[in-house]
Length: 499
Image (tube, rainbow, N blue to C red):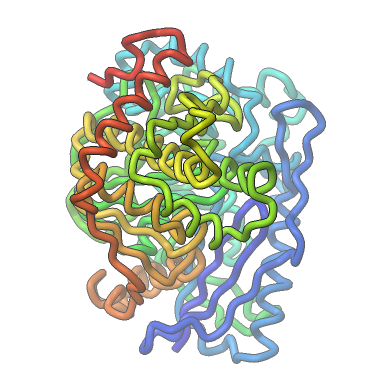
């Protein structure tokens, strides 16, 4: 028996076929083979065609079906890029291109809603500002494209659209509504007061189904095209960051999932429904099989791996990333006083949407060499993670363990050991990805795996990183210097005082 996992990203759509008994990936495909285009007709806009996601999925399924019989697929799971807006007309065709996660046109719309609804109500019931999320994007369409808005029959998230194409059924999930800032955490229901404030009609919402369960099933058209039997449960659906956490078996309060690609993300599970009053981190419903309420607190840092790539191009173009990592270990913990702020990739939500730029501070032209610079970059990225995790701790998060895929920045010994030491947390590195997480989730949601422990019993842990006790004092001092430089960059001496 196979479980099929689908990961709808903005760069590609990846499909993986998981052998349920062994827990091994038997086949995977990603499309397009080059990065998917993003349409940006104006500055800060970002759009993609929903039909293109479906076509990429079809290409991947055809590749896999040429090697494996998809009639043996017994469950389907979907992971998707969060916060996007897909709108369909009554013929169930998109009325416009999807407004995706990195489009920031609705920032002012969300700020108006925060003030109009009231900050206290937003923070106690939504646990977030309406911000630049799905509800605000739909409200932007209503205000700026009224003829298009009038044609909208239903709106949904990217993963909901793929579920519709596979099943013929229009649906969303409570977790998806929370990503769009349309979930009331106090009353545990859809936040209709947000829709009312924006003037969004209730009949434009899709039916809410479980994120983990087997309510939606594939239709005859899917069987005809791919061979996946009609009636196969589409039994898991989650945004990419909750799904990344799920794929790493991050389900319990105190557990944290992290990624360190171009940007950095930390996603921690908590059972305390609490908001950050400054919206530096965001709280959503988590995907879990627990009957107890679980929230995911999401931290995103724009300037992480992109700084490492910049450093390689401009400081050490002759070195590979592995050689850079080796050279960084020749400098002491704390980089001999050299401090790097990594925030050079636009405004940072964790800094209250300020754009302070990347900075290198305290360079000594006699003592500091290339190894110090590279280590300070790696430490500076780790410090930004620690800074965000400190904010998350104020919301009740207990960072006992951090889990990550062994990729990107987590291949870097200085970065991961610095993060482990500063947080006092064990870091566990695994061999998994989003599409495999969706495949495991669907097998769990369909009841083939009876428990989460069974679903993750074959998850391959590659390495464990423990705090470096001999680094602790130096890193603690360096982190305090880093926060002081951040306060200077912002122009507020109290800025980095978190409480």
